[in-house]
Amino acid sequence: MINEIIPLGNPDIREEDIEAAASVLRTGMLIQGSHVKQLESNIENFTSVSNCTAVSSGTAALHLALLALEIEKGDEVIVPALSFIATANVVEVVGAKSIFVDIDPVYNTILVGDIEKKITSKTKAIIAVHEFGLCADMPSILAIAKKHDIPVLEDAACAIGSKIKEKFAGTFGEIGTFSLHPRKAITSGEGGIVVTNDHRLGNLIKTLRNHGIKFDSNPIRFSHAGLNYRLTDFQAALVNSQFQRFDKALSKKAKLAEIYLNSIQHPALKLPEVPNDFVHSWQTFHLLVEDNHLRNKLIKSLADSNIFTNYGAQCIPYMSYYQKKYNHNVEVEFPNALRAYECGLAIPLYDKLTEKQVLDISKIINKFK
Ligand SMILES: *Cc1c(COP(=O)(O)O)cnc(C)c1O
Image (cartoon, rainbow, N blue to C red; front, side, top):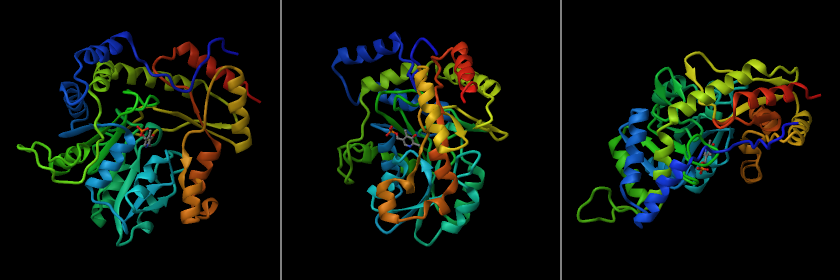
């Protein structure tokens, strides 16, 4: 039993962050001011990318990315079978077909060996998801994409700060997206980010974010049918303030993850693994439990000790809309994604946790029978 309640996630919003947002509110200039531009240049500098667009959610970021890539009805998009459901929902919303690929059973990212089997003349994009904050195998995915001349969209919602060698998640493919949801590493409440090194795509995304008003046009021109997916200036100020200690937050989380890795020892649990040269940002610390019954029992038992956990991500083709539309034999076609969905467990990991709390949680997990 732990005396205080330990939620699964808990954003580190400090007084200085609140003051940063409040000072924008006091000016009355709530949108389209300097703080959104500052956020965009912060992310450009951090990830070494040439074009960043701040938007109203991670899902809006994915939607704009697909619109900018001109994905539409009749097209097919490769999507990993395990992710947060938004990754596939946006494909459906633009009228394209989600072509699911199973995941690697150890790393939870798209099973690279299965991608080519699913490519057809209609394939218009591959979405790679950096699940739980671990990069997908981008070198292999990019090689396949290049061979077939298909753009790669990285859903890096969980992966600001994740890397392969020195290269940041979100910067491998044509377009990358991040989320600023409270469960993610830095937050504006709702918010998202799109990054690209393609100037034309970047300007198109900025145009589509703002009602289709051509970016940087003077006098203004309504050149596209766009949306309003803008982030507010006070939200951007909240993020910019947190961003100043982002490197520290990442290293604290890495340290806490290391403690879990060294202290959780249980015959029914498999710990996450990180390939050589990959830098995990630990958005989620994800365990694989022996079976579904035991996973559910563990969730309940930890909750009785005031430790709140949940399953990690959805097996998307198994969710009712997708089951009805595509009627996949999920057990046979996506066994690894189904197993991660039914037996996966996300445990608390955020930079506000102390090392002692993480040790205590580990001990309680180890005692589970
Ligand atoms: C959180 C998340 C999203 C959606 O982000 P929102 O900001 O909540 O819209 C999309 N994809 C993945 C993989 C996510 O984890």
